[in-house]
Image (cartoon, rainbow, N blue to C red):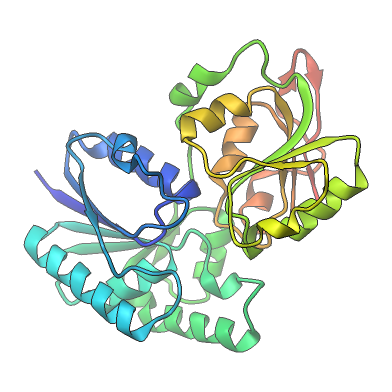
Length: 310
């Protein structure tokens, strides 16, 4: 049986959903291990998201920020575990794991793949200098692995750094999601979003929109360092929740609002579209791969609604 190792620093949010669906779907045919880092949004009951035959190994020194000491120690941890497992395939997820993992790609017996889930050089909250450095790093490491972008837009960006790339659009498990749909779905005029309350998700814009509609209810499912920017009186912040509880909570909510500044391809958007929410999204990579302005391929109770980008 072939061995597959997934390496991910940011195990939470959409990446967690993506990885759990991917790994659970292949664990009966392959030996699957996950080398991961913890974040605030990483669930306490993480093991419950994965099949019991999947090996979970925490990389203690994984950190989101660039740190020479911690990154070096994380590199040693990853290298030691890869040597012990000796995988046939290595799949790296997001920028930090992508950079560290590709630095180790001297073992030609392992095939290596990399999915950015939103390139770091597209971040709108970083200086031009930092973004140029991130772009240079991607170019230097671009040919160390085959890039599998998670959307057509991300694939187009990958062409700036390597020709060894393809794309497989993010997907959702509709059989699992169908269990939560009920007669109360899409019955309340509530605007919601899901994700980290950080610069990427643009909570300032979310707050501004909520302020323009004081008589409407807005819900942010998640938490983060910019929580204080969500100060409109009609916004409820739930904090991090179990995925099952989230899918139950959003059923009656009719509108999905995604104000992100950059994305790969949002899992929460795909799920909202499956549940026939009316989606309002920013015109960025991932969102504009998914949403056709003023076009509704689905209807709710026989009434068609349009999807919008802004």
